[in-house]
Image (tube, helix red, strand yellow):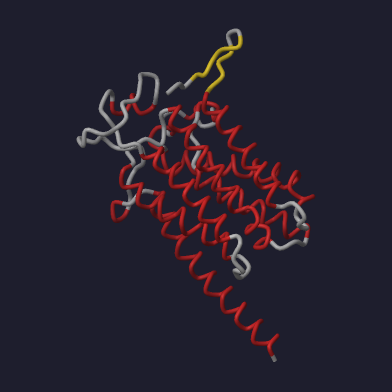
Length: 261
């Protein structure tokens, strides 16, 4: 666990930025592979640039105002210090999806078809990105007396908050769950699913895992029903995704009935 990987002269190279960059590159590589031979292949370079910018902006806003406003309200100058870590994956997803939807509308291409193509690549990037959280000592769990946990070193946010107490490895388990979802999506990709189903399945599976793991998180404030912002976001994502799946399934059924007649 290293917050700083190495130095170039006096310039520190943070593990967080390196791993996030690696996650983006690997996700883009997988996305390019999955999009080969489709009408979306030539759109990816431009789309990824816009989506990353939208994701970073939204991720920081989400983290600052929903997860750590108690800290940033007292340290306003730190709000823009994104190189020190502190972005919300859910915020990044929302920003990235909104940017992608806008791009698709402007380019007159199907957002849902594109989202189905990209879904496995997105969750793979998320899974790798959690390694950045682990090395940086954020997105950590709450204290555990189970005899199984992570003791974060000095210099991490986790140590500042809990000291040398062992904490649940929430971020590691979330990364592992992301890899499981990635495998499930690759298997489902071979099935003749209605438009949007693969992307919505990804949303539901990730949100279920995130909701459950939030019970182990030790870095998030809690709101109504003692749920975190991550849990409330997950519930909304699940409900909206299920409603959209029902709508697309009905559309698909009606289309088949029309074609059969």
